[in-house]
Image 1 (spheres, rainbow over the protein chains, first blue to last red):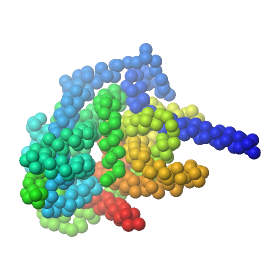
Image 2 (tube, chains in turn purple, orange; image 1 turned 45 degrees about the horizontal axis):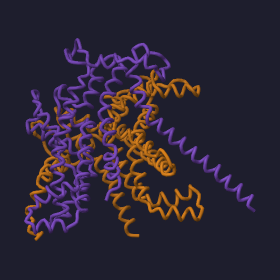
Image 3 (cartoon, rainbow over the protein chains, first blue to last red; image 1 turned 90 degrees about the vertical axis):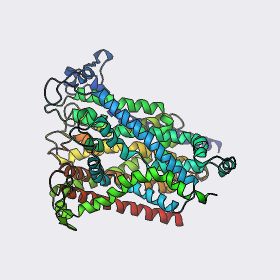
Image 4 (cartoon, chains in turn orange, purple; image 1 turned 120 degrees about the horizontal axis):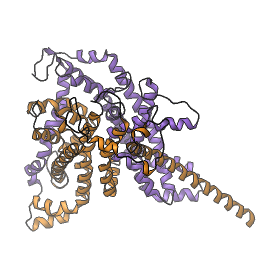
Length: 308
Length: 300
């Protein structure tokens, strides 16, 4: 009796081990697939011209073979053509533009979102639920439909023209995005967690609504607000369509547009080494941001999938 | 005490409502109007009359529009189901391992924090015939190099490359959402299953999937709506040429933008608006399905 029981547990254990080995193998394989593009990007960017031209391509190169020539050539000045006298890939110009746009948009979005979330969570007014439902329903509408008219609005506001200034570009790039229904929804949830008693106590003490928002609600909900700030500032990094439409000059471009533009404008053969050096530069700041605020980013993003 | 706040509440909402009126509500309304204009010149604001369907008929008769529709629907109906199934499997696997699950989760999330254009350009190198990683792997199995996205490639290989890229990009978000969804499932269901010595497959089918189904449904619909709007990934992978021959990998959104670019030509803006509205109506169907099904769920 005890013998059969023993073999049973043995078989069970063996099965369990095999299953866990297979599970780890599966996850490891997926991890490799996820990492390959990053690896290939960096690997290609570090290959010298002669190494790149090897067929089949080398999968590994020794640190002694690493070559930063591709990175250096990105900043070399173009000798002829439309971009004469400029660096091949003016990364720092694009980086500055992206950071500036990101900061302005984030400040705007945070302010409008906090104010709206406060009204929706704390104040009572006629039509509150209706307005909120209408705002939520806009989240499902493809943004492409707004862009046609928004471009005309920008033209009408005289923000897009041959001699567009930096301020005009920044206005066009940021103002339309200074609000977010999703973040309002997200922050409203956090505000609702704050007990009503605090509000009434503050009222008795003669605190105004705005004072209460500033001194109680914002500090209490600061982790959520912080998540919103990080997620929102990442937005400018992936923006492509709108900046492409409303920026006239190359020096006003954001990273995505600069990246795609720098390697499509130039006719002739594609230089994979330089391209991958540029994509590495563009990808790096985002990864640094991610590893710095991993918890907040992942928490915030997972919240957006499970609504309510 | 609180009802006195009436007008003050609107003051708090004002910045958001003002911005949204100008950049969301008015444009939505105006897109329909533009699609009914005849001979519209957007920069001067002049029109030559109105029409109900002419602009729609013009684009519906363009073969390019149907190429765009085909590509968009293939991307949507192939990439979304695959990425949902794969990410569910990954989420289940992550839940069952005792160690390293945080590290795996972090790695799997990386594609989310990248930029479509940059990664698309990287995938273009990975799929290149002579210098790409994909053909190296195929070589290990004795398969000859394929021109996936180059000058001699066909629609199938380009679409395959695009789908791999799109799925790679979209897994991150779904894995994260499914794993955090699973954490919310009450442990006692799993304990009960353990007592009944139910197999892993039964547990997955009878507990995990049903209890996760509201999230799976929500993610399926929103991902499909997202996939219907594919554009950046196409530009990232293929560049402004959008495939070989040019425009063969165009999507509906790319079609809208192509016509929008020609705003100087009479009437083109209305064609772009008509195409955008067709896309809007398609996504509306998906949202309606979602809200209908999720309402049904609340009732039982």
